[in-house]
Each structure stands twice: as structure tokens, then as C-alpha cells.
Amino acid sequence: MKIVGLTGRSGCGKSSVSAFFRAQGCACIDADQVSREVLQPGSPCLPRLQNAFGFDIVDKNGVLDRRLLANRAFATPEGTRQLTDITHPEILSRIRAAARQAETDGCALFFVDGAVILGTPFEKECDRLVVVTAPYDRSVARICARDGISAEMARRRLDAQTPEATLCAAADYLICNDGSLANLELQCRSVLDSLRKEAHETNTTDDPKGN
Image 1 (cartoon, rainbow, N blue to C red):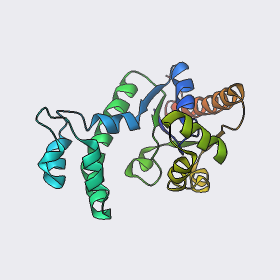
Image 2 (cartoon, helix red, strand yellow):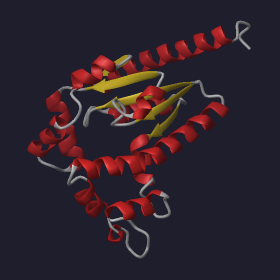
Image 3 (cartoon, rainbow, N blue to C red):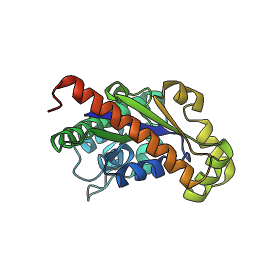
Image 4 (tube, rainbow, N blue to C red):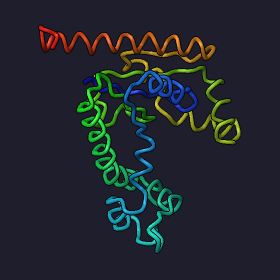
């Protein structure tokens, strides 16, 4: 089974691409959703976060005050690194478990949809990287509509992210979301066909009889 990282900057339309792959029967996991799950009540990350950032970040019901955590964690580079060191191993553990299950289920491809893959430890675990791009102004408009923020705030968010050129340089496949939905789906289908062909050729090479 090949693990495929699916990434792109905010507002690029990555979720639409992921939805297309799911609709084609592909196994997909949303890494951003997993990152939220590891902060839910009962997560093994919470006690460690309390030790690092204060016991008051979790209320009596075990619910994390995300804003308070963010204020403290992102106040310094050391705090940000500490937050990452605590949460990322649990995130990776859950993604790997899902990948093992997908392989057990006989999936040839396993997509990991994540805003931040490039430059993380998980990048090395991806056999292929698919990057979704979009025109800057169109991304700004999508962010504004999705999150209800001003264009200025959307631009700040985009400008703080990994440059598109850096993502493109690392990509094995590019999907340019600069046209209609039909055009986007056409590109998605082409990428998926190529990935499935790769997976099939790998399996055939490993087993010359095609078993």
C-alpha cells in the first residue's frame, strides 16, 4: 500500500480534492481532524499539556480551553515546540494505526489529508506527495467566505504559511485548482489513475505472478 500525502495552503480547495478521492472509494484520513481529536477529553496528551502549560487549561469536566492553551503555547518558540513534541507523536500514532487498518482491508492507496505535512516527521512516511494550488486572490476569497474573516486577516494567514513554490518543488503531483469544478475533478481523476497504476506496478513487481 502506498501512503499519499495530500496538502496545500489554506483556501486552495484541498478538502474538495480529498472528497473526490473518498467518493472514488479511496481510504482517506483528515490529519487536521486527528489533531483536534487528540485534544478531546480523555486524551493521553491532556495531562502532559497541563504539566507543561498549567493545570487550569483543562476544566473540571476534562474539556481543554484551546484558546488559553494557544495563548500560552504560541507565546514563545519554546512553547510552540513543546506543544508539538507532546501532540505530534499521538497524532502520528493514530494516523499509522489507520494506515495499518487500511492495508489490512486491502487498500492500495491511503491518503493523508493535512495542511502541514512538508517539513514534519510524517513527510518521510509518504510514498507520494500531492499538492493542491490555487490563485492567491481566489484563496483569500475562499478563506473569507469559509471563516468569516476580513481579506486582510486572510492574507496574513496565507502569508504566514509555507510558500506555494516550496510546496510545488516537493510535490510528486500537482493539482491546480484555478478553474471549474469539472476541471478540478478531471485533474483529480488523472492523478488518481496515475497513483493506482503505480500501486499496481509495485504489486506486480513484488509478485511477478500477480497474485
